[in-house]
Length: 85
Image (cartoon, rainbow, N blue to C red):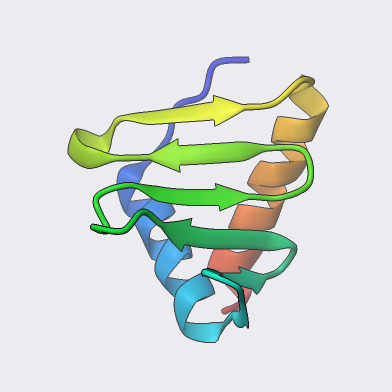
């Protein structure tokens, strides 16, 4: 599965999770997705139980998942957060 990602979309969802999510340790949880950043804020992370996204400086990103269906479910969660919050 090719992962084309819109950086504005990812950053928008990240902010919604931070602003409206429940604080969990170093991150925030909203809609089944946990979001947090590294110590300097240049790299952000969003993850659920099956998919991890690392999004960094110069819009470089990496997804870690085992099955395409896991990625599809993760994308649905991100779209739901963007739409509903």
